[in-house]
Length: 84
Image (cartoon, rainbow, N blue to C red; front, side, top):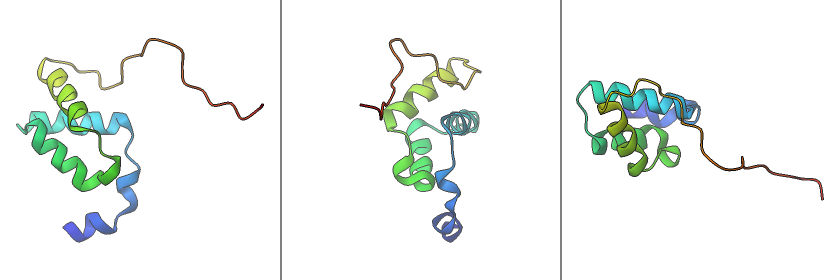
């Protein structure tokens, strides 16, 4: 199975929403944040969320959060301007 993961380009196509759903599914299976983070790192490598982020989502799911979308963040949106 590890060979499949190592050779698959799919590990780069997970959105934040996808990762949140994976975390929710893993919590339902009874996995803790450390185990979930290890699984995510195995598949997503450098694209995996930090352990702090995984802990935050595990806590939210454990407290009953159903919506897996990110909450809106305060402040001005980050933009890039290529015109000088």
